[in-house]
Image 1 (cartoon, rainbow, N blue to C red):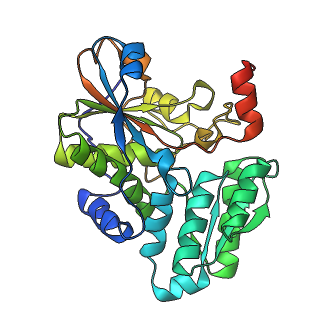
Image 2: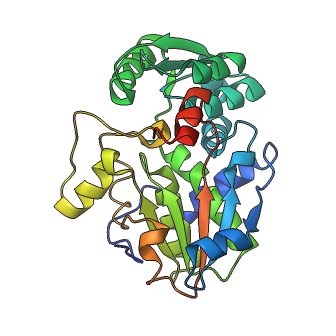
Length: 297
């Protein structure tokens, strides 16, 4: 399902996204938008697939946009006290990268069983790591306690207006690179990419359909949309831990009334159309990659 109009007030505006882009542009170059004949052939139905390569970002993920959007918006005093966030990897790397670049200390709370490779990447960028909680949501509660105790800025991976504005800069770039798109598909964890895409599309290209794609085992946003009420689940079951969320979030959910489905399920609806896919990151760890390649996942 998809909706082209948002009937509830958005947490951010196009102006917020444009301001975030202005702040981060000195630190990030636009990522490529590329089309591949082989991919078009696999998808079929005459669909032109344009891939937005956020895996080319300096941290390997689009979330460096979000981190820079947060840190560049801080006052000098806020930068001195620093930031704290919960993360499983990509959000933390984005914040740590931005903090190191702009002189803001970053403390990151990671689930107790978090992937060692991702922990090492965050430490390498200068972050302080605090293990705690069995998953992202429990780690978030710990991050909130640290923020209060240390006077640090809490930087939630979704429930933060600066984060949402940073994610919206992806769609600004996409529409400059390919103005005649008919649809854009984004992965949904907490929903920052989807919110950004909806806000930018509604303002600049109302005919552009925005589809969110969520893992079946971590479908809190999808199921909440269909239920008409926000749902929280006891666990999230997906090896794609960047989208392994089990709840919805205050700022994102009202705008996320935009629909969720995968491109292969949408081939008939999108036949003959030009579609953008956001390749949001490439930070898969070695063990998980080996399991994927072996067919174990």
